[in-house]
Image (cartoon, rainbow, N blue to C red; front, side, top):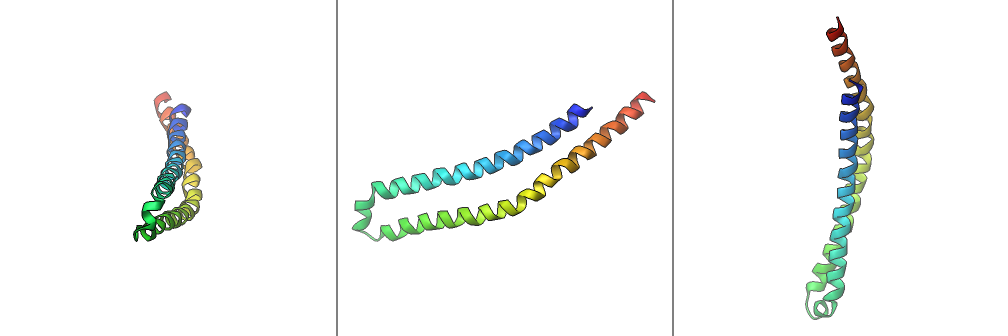
Length: 103
């Protein structure tokens, strides 16, 4: 009874945590790839106009990361507030089911 609601709430918490970890990991990998490729091909970029596009891509990635980070920071308390609400709702629901089975 308590285990079911505990598992559902725990699964929701794990999903929220994983989504934040995936978000940070995605931008860390993307930034690393962009910076590495920029440094590796720097001499080639100097002879063409691609240096502007490479720098713009890096700036755009950093800007996107911070905009999305601020959005997720605002959204995080809403998601975490659902956890105790869901836990209590499922707990009450399981208690009602237990009462109907025992009567």
